[in-house]
Amino acid sequence: MSELPDYTPPRVWTWDAESGGQWASINRPIAGPTHDKELPVGRHPLQLYSLATPNGVKITIMLEELLARGIEGAEYDAHLIKIGDGDQFGSGFVDVNPNSKIPALMDHSTTPPTRIFESGSILLYLAEKFGEFLPEEPRARTECMNWLFWLMGSAPYLGGGFGHFYVYAPVKIEYCIDRFTMEVKRQLDVLDRHLAQNAYMAGDEYSIADMAIWPWYGSLVLNIVYEASEFLDTESYKNVNRWAAQIAERDAVKRGRMVNCTWGDPASQLHERHDASDFYTKTQDKIGE
Image (cartoon, rainbow, N blue to C red):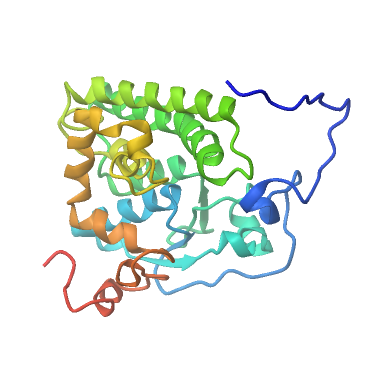
């Protein structure tokens, strides 16, 4: 391993606003709003404020899957939150999510309206509200919850650990990349061993556990996030690849990936979604037909 410059942590850490790499402008050690800005409210009861990062995609996939099952109450407006511009620090957004992270959801079908933040909480809320994608039998439900919470504890090692130091850090640090690469490969092995015995994360049925895990680990092996599939040798995880490819072919997943997306192929971007017909303005080919 190459030598690193000596560094002794100070007795009291102070914030250097110029450090932090690509996302330095939105990183800060304090919470709360930076400016006053009300959130828009569309015509549907469910109002989503998000961006098509893996955490955001979890929710748009869930909503599109619910709509695909004919659940009209799952109709939603998806408003774009530009995290690079600091939209998540507006007063309206902070009122919905005091943690200033996407996604955030308001359910106006309740009195008063219900705020839901943290992607795992939103998935669980929607599953319970509509009675879909969450097993009812206690053992199966617990297995689903096991994997949902596995994702919530594991993904920060992939995103904030591996993804940050491999892609976004201003300096490539061998120790950090090695440490988080080792952990991500361990996690992929956990998934691969489990999926060798199961069609989906909670067994034979597609559930919110799959919707939570796929945008991170499915996208990783499909080279959608971080473009690190060769570096991580993701082809060797055969069962994860089978599962990832299977879910990627679902029409609701294709639609969910488009919502609030602002990068890549323009035809795959739907900056905001207010009606199902919005998807069909992008290309002449209708998704799902």
